[in-house]
Length: 80
Image (cartoon, rainbow, N blue to C red; front, top):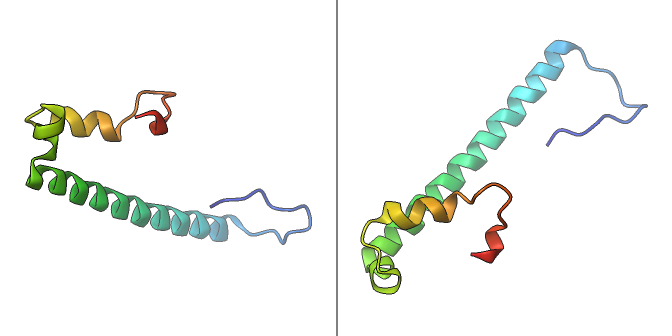
């Protein structure tokens, strides 16, 4: 992740800074893709075994999956 440079850190030019920022974006995008892939795997497993229908009484995964992965602003995920 980006960090604020220490006062004695060597200065880099705009091109090097841009390269570093693009590298960070690439890394973060890869992490997000891995997370999204795992979310899809979890949803598929829940659907495969019908857990959502049996325990929650909800038949469509979109009715429980979207709120499960998109908490309201300021809501703590651990309270779910």
